[in-house]
Image 1: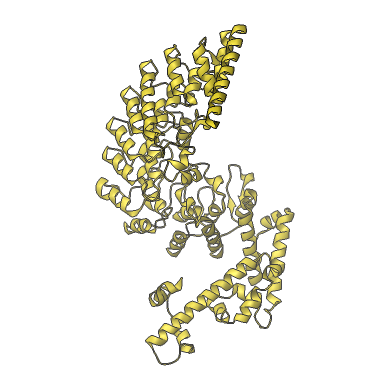
Image 2: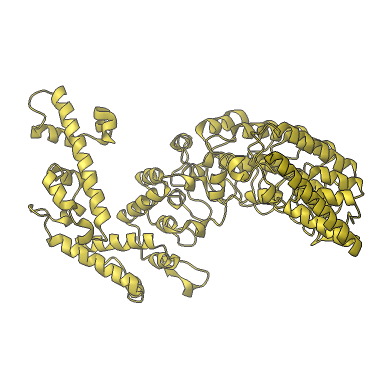
Length: 618
């Protein structure tokens, strides 16, 4: 009964629509009927669309806000209705105000609601990196109607819909659709089709004469787009079809191989990189900023791909790029330590400077590569080295990311440990003597600023507080001023900074005189004494408990640093105890608590300790 009632209701609605349409057709022009069709297509009113077609009288090429009913029918996935419009004489070459044709609407991805996340491997990382090539994706899907995007990937009609799309695209082409037309973004139907991931659709367009070397407004070709999608099959198709792999994007001047090496995360593009090389792509062609694909391999890829480029394509690690940067310049920016070590084995100078006087420490500090910073310092890197503008490694580390890289952030910034390592690198460089009073050159001498002043200007509160806390510590220990008169005047002129500086000094002064309850140890002792010294006291559970009690209320600015120091001391004490226990088994002359074992342990290097107790060290 219920089903019969629904059928009657549906019939009733159709009769009502028919009456309305007929009534209005009698009292108005065909133009009104055409407007109704515009509204019905946009709203997805299937019964109304069907009735309007049945009644006829449409102006098939009439426009509303620059679009025709054919545009809307294809955009909103009314394919049977679009076919009827074509049979009624709709102009398949007609463009919207944005320059889009029905063919572009037909070949645009309508399956994925979020192409970047659902279709492109590492897409969210590329977005975080602000990879400029994502603009090409945005161009290709600009005409999508989000209300009609459905995920048909896992439905039983997926194959049917694909076949329906192929037939309709062929119908458009047979009806005279221009396969190489471009919209206002310079995007062709082929650019759009790449982001469907449908190779057969790409083949149909290519066989119909689509220009595979056509460039959009950022200069990307369909080959670039296929590389971004990490679609090896599509890349191979374009290369076999004669795609010009030497074409460069407009601003950055990147070839498809540049993109493949830039986007290679966890070997995602290794197959594509090798494929491009096999077809003749050049590892040593520079882009606008003089970076070559091989520079990217050293900077972003793993040791296996690096060896492949050297062994199979004679890539030269000792070859400088146009800016005077060596392979080490890029290796110290790679999160893969093995790449750095391999490049070092080639005999390159760790004290090498680029043409703008930047050292390797500048590049490693810029990305807060802690291990590489430590290594370079151990090899004699100059802490306060200045580039041609007077910028030091410390200043590069403190610069906000967006001040250095407006787009195309290096892959190293995506790593999970970046924020933590940035703090550690800043602290390390300060401890080793980074000069906050150095002046950074500007175009006009009167605009010259100190390193500390630039940190203030950048409004990086975290870096600013770290500097002030560190300076206050050094002054409390040495009784010597660390800021020069220029920087002290800056502090006096900034009430918030002056107040923070004063409170840090007050906390340190209090730490020196305040003892941990029930002990003779001060909080300042824990803050400043070597880790092994503090570790001896970490055995005292009562001391640890009293130390942590009310710590954040007593010393809000230094609490996290104090807490971290004691936790490290506790961990260190456990390592010492474990080591002494093992030593007592190896040299069994006394109980493991014997002081002699601690004395022996003290003379062991970190490498010795790792060998002795392995993972216990961590």
